Length: 301
Image (cartoon, rainbow, N blue to C red; front, side, top):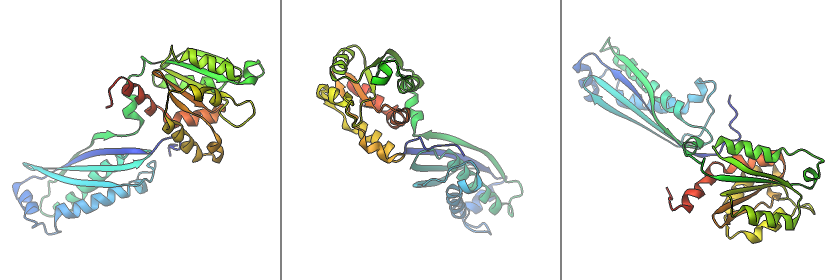
C-alpha cells in the first residue's frame, strides 16, 4: 500500500460513470414503471452502489480505507442506454477516483443482475472517471517558474566547515519540484546581525527567502529573533500549519519558534534546521503557500 503519511487532508471529489445498454424498449419501460420482477432497479442498484463505494478498500487491495463523506448516484436514460453517474467526496489524504468507479461498476452489475431475467442481451459498457479534484495535483498545474528564491542555512557548525549542509539542499530540491529555481544559496553563522543584514538585502531581490536553522530554543538560535522584527505583515497561519503537521508526527514540533511573513512583496519563511524538520515543514505548506503570490498580484482565485 502506497505511503500517504506525508500528504495533507483536503477536499477531494471524483465523478465516474458506467453505462448499461438493454436490447429492447420494453426493458426500459419495465424499469421506469417499476415492473421488473426482482424489484425497483434504480433503488436496488443505488443501494448496491453506495455499498460498493464504502467497501472499495475491502476488495481493491491497494486502496486505503478512507472516510466517505458524500456519495450521489444518479441515472440518465438515453434511448436504450442507462448512464450511471457516481459522485464521491472526502476530506482526506488521498483521492476517491477508485471509489467512484467501483461504485459505478457495482451499480451497473446490480442492474445487469436484475434485468437479465427479462432481457438476455443486457450489456455493461465503459466504466470511466470523468472528473477528479483536490490535493496537490490541482496546485501542481500552476506555473511558479517566474518566482525567484533564495535559501539560507543558519548554522555555526556548517559555516565553520565542521559539517555538511543537507537541510538547505533538501529545500532546494523540493522547490525544484514546483519549478522554482534557487538563485541564491548561502551558509552563514547563526549570528543576529549577520542574519538581519542578509534578510534585509535578500528581501529586496527575491520573491521567496527561506531560512533553515536557528528556530529552536538553544542559546545560539537567533534566526527568529533577528527576522521577526523585520516582518511587515506576519502570516501566522503558515507556521501554525507546519507545527500542526509536525506535531502529528513528532511531539517536539511544538517547540519550534518558526515565523513567516512578508517584507515588502517577499515571503520570508524560517524552517527548522534538521532534515526531517525541513522535509515535514515543506510538505506541510507547499505548494499551497505559493498562492500568496497570486494574492499579492491581485488575483485571489
